[in-house]
Length: 207
Image (cartoon, rainbow, N blue to C red):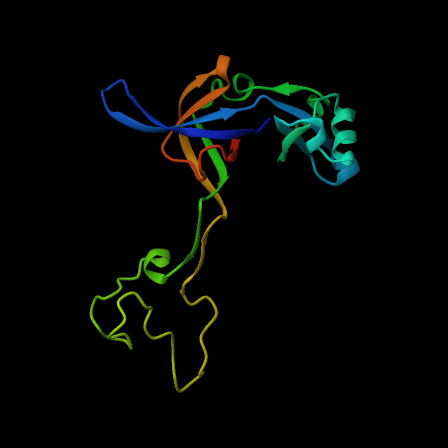
């Protein structure tokens, strides 16, 4: 099984064996319920669908209620598919916990949605210098981008030119975060470093 669904609890710090203070993120990982199993014969690929985080019956749609009843579980808020070649070893209704998946794992990949920053200019979004040297068509506007391209030919702005725009609120994957501690009694996983998203946001953990 390659991963679990979790929720970002927040950040803290722990001391390593050699006395270094390590910044860490605490993640509530699972328990997750198997709600669907994809097979190559039926679906064209092998995967397992996991559900996480309880919700009340009134907040689940009728199709989802039937979906969860088929798996023999209560309605859940978050559904995620993980590719798995050995999904046939699982069955509907199985519960997967952090102890089952990450007990002997040293590194994990974490997928989350970054914090939304709204519409931002080029200084914050792309790290432009701003006032700097007043050249390249920018002499009296402190945080503007300046010249955007050629004026004679081809007389247009090329696609991909860095400008102001929507920043954040996008899928981000962080690779190879060291697992500092697994706390199975509380379904907690402590990883070294930062994880994308705000407190309480959902994350996907992959081995």
